[in-house]
Structure formats: structure tokens, C-alpha cells
Length: 491
Image (tube, rainbow, N blue to C red; front, side, top):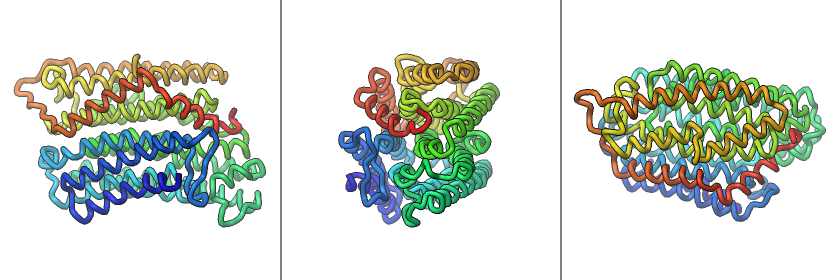
């Protein structure tokens, strides 16, 4: 088990070192794809070995449980699709974005490094190490967001860095307070007071007031990285300016990785401060995030911003599901995370090809896609259907289960408000996407060319989305195990 965890972390790091030494070539790009496949393979192998209870490896420094496995699968699947599509970035997209050899080299180094730190964040058994890993994602992705080096991209980069740095600083204060509560209230050993298992052991003896303050700071801090209100404003700018594969990784994985930290810490906070505190906080930020996303979707005229606001909408729904806190709610939340990650990856990769063809992401400039490119049109339409939560795709099942969990948790009023906001977002997404897919092609509309690697990634993404919709299979038990071990006092 230790070997699998270390392999999942070291494989993308090895790909980053190879790209640093040899540059961004098809061989090193293929190594990044292989590292993502390795993460997926390690997650699958761990899934067969991890039971319902938590398992520890490497002297307690790393953690392998059902939630770890779930997040490794999400990182592995989305990372494989995004890095596979990135191979095509060497060709037409690289020239289109006016990126020189140095920029391509940086892209090749940072992309697998991004995968590595996300894997570390979900495998670490120490909240200090988790904080460092989440902060590292900010540093790495800042260079990727500003990759095109345009004025707009640099503005988005600085906005991303400033807002997320404030958020992660708030999370650091929460981490310090939780350490203080564990070290001086629960008499935990100083060198282990940041370990998740030690915190869980002493959770009921933590000082409620200090833990409540720590929990609020941690929710706000990691919520900033998850795209939740009030530090959500970076998300649309960053996603709209980053290269399409990077946008897919940020939207499909990074937001969920940040939120998984809140899921891990909630049983500890609940045991010390009571379940009502974080439940109230999650409900407020979830509903407000849903409101902001729904309103912005009605006015946006940009494809990538539309997809970014959709990510906000889904993270708001995930926060509301976490507030319910039941086993059904958490397991549905995890299915939603996986289905959203794959569907959003397909959409961003298809959107990247549209951007490369039109030199624009404005919805008004991109019309009649279904008539002009069957692959891109079908991919975008499939991703949209996934995102809208329509059957037979998995987000239909996850949203239905979330609705059931809210009703059973006596949060019917929350369910009513959420359904209204989701309906507004649904209508806005359908209207904007209809213009892109079904409108009449403009005179002189450019040809949409799709590199073979991007085409393959899109096809595989569609197949995976369809497979998840037909049956979650053994993943159902995995999600239930992860939910059971992270329900805590909110049960």
C-alpha cells in the first residue's frame, strides 16, 4: 500500500523531471500521460485493498482510505484525458497561442507537477502537509493560467494568486488553531498533533470555541480554492485564460481536491463543536455560490466563462450535499464529483478546439458547431447533457440522491431553493449552448481542426461518461465506504 501511494506521487514528478531535462516533446508529453495512467492504476489497485475503515501507510505520513481512492480515480481519469489532449498542444495550438519553446518547456514541467501535488494533497495524513500541497497548486497553476502571456491572462493570473493566497492564508490560520487545540487541549504529542488520525482520536476533547473558529477559517480558506463564496471571483477569469487542458484539470479536479479537505476535516470539527456549526456554514456558502453562479450564467457571453460558472454551480451543490452530511449525501456527492470531472473535461477540451479555430471564446462568434464538426459538436453536446444532469448520465443519479438526502435530513426548504437556482442555471446553459451548437454557421466560418490526440481524449471521455451513467458498478461500494468514514458527528 505504501508503494502504491508513493508511486502515485512520484510518477508525475518523474515526468516533470523528464520534461525539465528534455523539454516539451512528444516523448515527454507521453510520459505525462503515462504518469496520469499510473495514478489511475494506483487508485484502482488501492480500491481493491482498502476496506470500509481507514488504512494508514508510511508511518502515518500518508493515508489510504476510500476517500483517498476516490480522489485518486478522479485525478487519474481527468489527468489522463487532459494530458492526452495536451500532446496536440505541441502542434497547432502551440503556434496559435504564440508560445515559444521556453513556454512549451514550462508547460511540460508544470502540468505533471500539478498532478503530483494534487495526489499529495489527497494522500497526506497530516493537515500541515495538506496545506502545503494545496498552496503548491496555487503556485504551479499561476504560471499555467498566465501561459499565453497576454494582458488579460496576466490580469487573471494576479487575481488568481492574490485571492487564493488570501484564502490559503486563512486556511493556515485555521490549521494553526486546530494544532493549538490538539496540542494544548487534548494533550496530543507535539510531533503528531497535525495528523488526521491523532486529531480524530482526540476530537471530542478539543476546545469547542477554538475548534469552531478553526473550522470556520478552514471552510473559508479551502472553500476559496474550491470556488465557493466569498472568494469565488478568481474562478471565471482563471478558467477562461488557462489552456484548455489546464482548465479541465482545474475545474474537473482541483476544485474537488480542495473540497475533499473539508470533507476530511468535518468529522473532527463536528465532534468538538457539534454538527450544526459547519452544517450552517456549508449551507450558506453553498446556496450563495449557487445563486451567484446561476445569475452569472444568465448574462455571460463567453464559452469558457460559462463552463467556469457551471463549475461554481456544481461546487455550490456539492457544499449543500456536504451540509446534509448523511451517508447517502456524501456518497452521492462523490459520484457527482467524478461525473462532473469527466463531463467538464470533455467540455473544456472541445471548447479549446473551438477557441483555436475561431481565435475567440465569445458565444456570438461560434455558431453552427454541429454542422461544421461532428466530433466537436457531439462532444460538446454530450458534455452539456452530462452537466445538465439529464439521464442516462451519472449526474442525474447523483442529483436525485442529493435531493433525497436533503429531504431526509429535514432540509426541504434548502432543496426547494437549490432546485429553483439549478433550474435558472439549466435554462441559461441550454440557451447559450444551443446558440453554439444549433445556430447557423457564420459566413466564412473557419474549419475546426482537431488533433488526433485531442480527438481520442474526447472519444474516451464520452465513453467514460456513458459508462458511469449506465452503472457505477464497484464504485458504489467505494463511495459508500468513503461516506461512512467521513460522516462523523453529523450522522
